[in-house]
Length: 222
Ligand code: URA
Image (cartoon, rainbow, N blue to C red):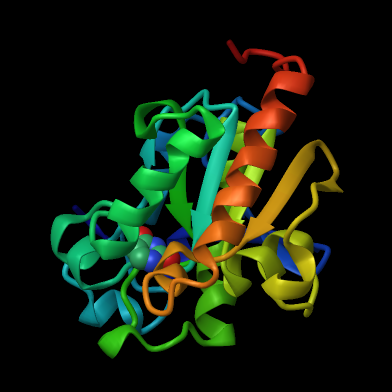
């Protein structure tokens, strides 16, 4: 994978405080226009923040590129860093388990994180790391153009909903931002020990299932 230098990644004007990525070969970057591979290719072996130096693998995202539902987590943990795939460790087992509550399987959805490289020791991502990495998530969301974005935990919820509120305040209802229904909920890792939040996460997944049954699929969605 070629090392990606800062000057080769063009960021245009800001939209709502977030720098926009210019994907070479795509002038307008309409929803569902830019394939995920083009975004992954643009990231290369990204060094836009120091996490690019310490990671083992960049964890881009996985799943159905035409998914109705996109899950957004925080950032890779140890297992994800080693395998290059999001949510493959303990939190991933938990996520796989609760998808059924929404009538979904892992193959049907698309899964990505706010940041693509593991913070050392699983510390929280820093604001400057989120700032550097989040334009790629934004393009992933525009590429998949899901009907629903499920935000797992505070970092994803605050990024997608552009709020400083915590997930305990935000969860339990369907929000809307632009085209997207947004369901903020607990990060699966937060429901392992202690498990008192697990029933609430499951409740949010059932709410997701109900929303999917109540709303017709958007353009290009089966
Ligand atoms: N936690 C996350 O937020 N994302 C992963 O991919 C794994 C654990």
